[in-house]
Structure formats: C-alpha cells, structure tokens
Length: 107
Image 1 (cartoon, one colour):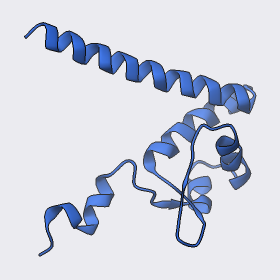
Image 2 (spheres, rainbow, N blue to C red; image 1 turned 120 degrees about the horizontal axis):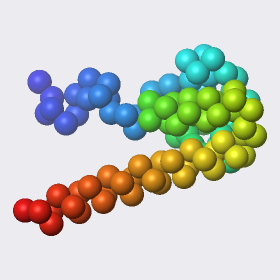
Image 3 (cartoon, rainbow, N blue to C red; image 1 turned 120 degrees about the vertical axis):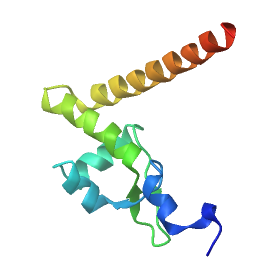
Image 4 (tube, one colour; image 1 turned 60 degrees about the vertical axis):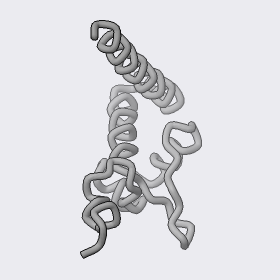
C-alpha cells in the first residue's frame, strides 16, 4: 500500500486540486467557458494548466467563480464582481488571522 500522502484519494479532499476541466466547471456553474475566461482575465481565478495546456479548476476556484456569478446575475459588471469577491476573500482571511492572534493572546 502506498504511503498515505501519495494515495490518489487524497486529491478528493483537496480543495485546491485542479480536478475540473473548463467545460465541466462551466456546466457545474451553469455558465459558459467565456465567463470563466473573463474571470481569469480579471485576475479573480487562475486555473492550472494540464500537460496538454487545458485549463483545470479546483473546488475552491469554483466557489469563488460561483460568488462572482451571483453578483453578475444581480447586475454587477464582471470587473466589479471580481473586485468585490477579491475584497471579500481578503476580509475573510484578515478576520481569520485576527481570530488566531486573539486566541494566542488569551493563552
């Protein structure tokens, strides 16, 4: 049996593993490849490339894309939606770090 860190099933739990093709990602989000490319052009998500050069998306990237899609569906321009999602992500990270720091001070 291979070491636990190299089992193929480990990728199933990895939010950052680029498991989804552009077509499958677009299908899952009920959108188009053009929308996903626009998210890349606006630097919201950067898909990894397969050996053949095809875009691959992770579950984390799909969640980010889904949030942008919600905003666009509500009438927000795609450029603005990408900026909002980036700022939301930065705020969430800052809050997580803040909580960690508060936890270390109380010990």
